[in-house]
Image (cartoon, rainbow, N blue to C red; front, top):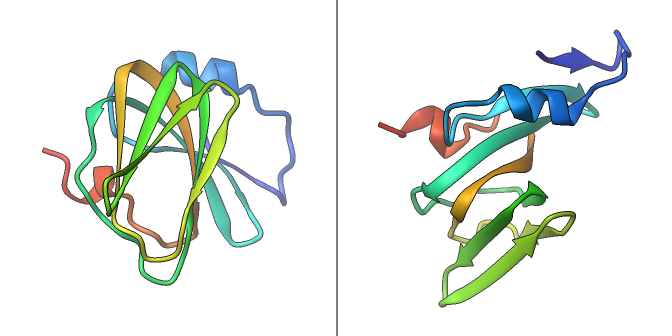
Length: 118
C-alpha cells in the first residue's frame, strides 16, 4: 500500500508492519514533499552502503535497531527513537531481533535491499 498526499487517507502503520513477512525489503507507506516514507522489517545485517548527496533518517518503530557508522561508531535505537545518518557517511543497519524500522529516503533513492539483497 502506498498513499500520496493528493489522495489523503489515514494510514495504519501497525497494520502495515503486521503484514510484512520478508526482511530488508522496503514497503512504501506514503509519498510527500518529493520523499517516500518506507517501512522495513530487519533481522540480521544490511550491506554497508552510503547515500551520496543525502542524509538517511531511521525511526525505530518496534524492537531494537542498530546503525553502524564508518569509524567504528554504533548507535542503538529503541522503539520511538530516531537517528539521522549524515550526508554521504558509510553505514549499516542491523537488528538483534526481528523488528520494524521506518526509513525515509528522498524519491528515487535505491535502498540496498532493493538493489543487492540476495
